[in-house]
Image 1: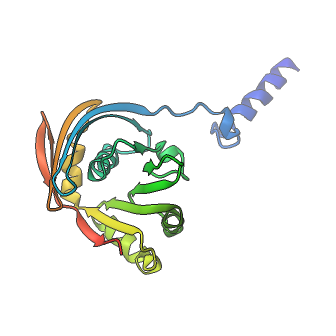
Image 2: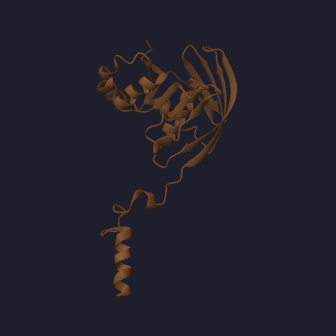
Length: 209
């Protein structure tokens, strides 16, 4: 009887085929994020903004280094003492980066990648400014073709695309501890570290109205 009870408990924990499909989510071991640190120096001539930022970035196990570095680039494009990273891929309802005012109202909502059109429209209804930084070459092109017409009335929305080769080069700069410098002028971004530097020219797919 005791042996049969132990077997039942094992099946309940692992499922009939050794999977965790039947185990409640809250009972599974949480996947731990990898913590990256970045000392980022921003010189944005377009906005007249010059400052140093100490960033802590939590990279979810399912997030690539390329996506993480695009998040850092997005931070640089809107750098501000009040701009903060969201909790990442583990929290679907939060932006990748957000800046709020003293009342808690959202000034800037930033998403990276290929967000669902409903998510973008919801962001535009909540924030004064919404920026989507997409990347991935053909995947970015396909995403934009799919959502473009449905976002025509989102006057607060700006969409930038990072070219595929630049995104790959950015990923090569990823380290657990980084010291990055970023200069922005006429929409062109020069970003680098001790390991090298590159120029990123984000393509404007949509400007704010």
